[in-house]
Image 1: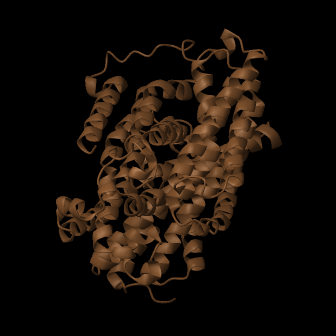
Image 2 (image 1 turned 135 degrees about the vertical axis):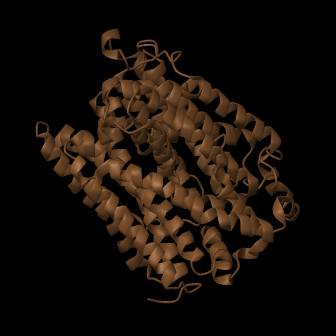
Image 3 (image 1 turned 120 degrees about the horizontal axis):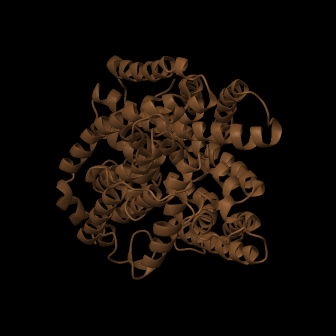
Length: 539
């Protein structure tokens, strides 16, 4: 089918084939358990916390993490770890301690359904449609990334690779639903570490170790906070305020606390404590994940000046594939490619299962067919899986217009997640917030992001990252202001209607009967302390 940058042997193809067959068999083995809609969409809320934690992280550990973060490490240096640390951990802990009691306790089947309970049908409908668009656009990233890997490494055509990837994910998600996706995500999590850790070690040794890399990269690439007093003082061209407000607050909390892709994994947990601990346990692993992504990107600055072959100059997304081409021999290559494929498929499957649930419950059942049987909605869920995958194939081609997958993803989050977080924050912690306040806040926040993106000159911001951070902040700010103003002139819900949905109107959770290592607040505090220490260490 063409020539890649190296030639895998028979054993490499066998490893990849075994993996593909295995994930399909997992879906088939779980088929008999998919008897109801809750089984298919929420795994019957029966999965242990440690499994949902790994799935929670693995659903996020997709193409963005593997290709995008390695690319960002090459392009921006150490500041890329902000996406993992200040850009993830506080939000994950906040989700577990403060927000999961509302999500899980309300028995909402999706994020849009929670918005219906807290606000009104219009807010649910707008979010359901915008989230459905977001998930298929994000799924397209994973499809494109997988196709790019297969094209560059194996020489397969881009179109053929996209179709193959789509069919495999379609089969195991369509058969086994969310449970199949979750258990495969756990397997994929371990595969990613096993397949990519040897690459990190070899690249580090060849580059002269950590000290060797730090001595050879630009000074602005060697720190995470030093140099952020001004935008021009660091590799990312963003000052500390942009990092803190744009990434650390709006984009981070907007994604981790409201994106149904990850929240859905916590909702599948067996009880409230497991649901709360799901994102908190995942935050510990998130802290060390830069080892797999940012470190190779930094090493590649030394090992692959201008990304090696001139045909790839400027394509930062090629950082990880080119390192694999440089270091992995036959056999290990098959394991490495399988690890990348696993990351892409976990991200793609996560988006497809989230799209399927939101479409079935929040669009189809809400507006098209309200009183059908559970069996009918289960059937519709499988149809939606097929349709979502077909749409994702087309959206994969949109990704090609962006030089960095991370820039593309952050652009999408600025549109969809930033204003949504504003609505959630006010809705959960301000009882005066009204249904129409939430709707107009969400709508105007989204429009603000769109106006800033389409009407400001492309060079208005110092870098793509700076543009994404500041657009997200202003979209969030607009949503907050509009919601407050509209809420002051519209009627709020009664205390009875808000029970279990707003802070102060919910049953207080007590974990004193649990050992310390199972208490959400204790685990969350430890995670935050580790985060602070690392930020000081790598300042």
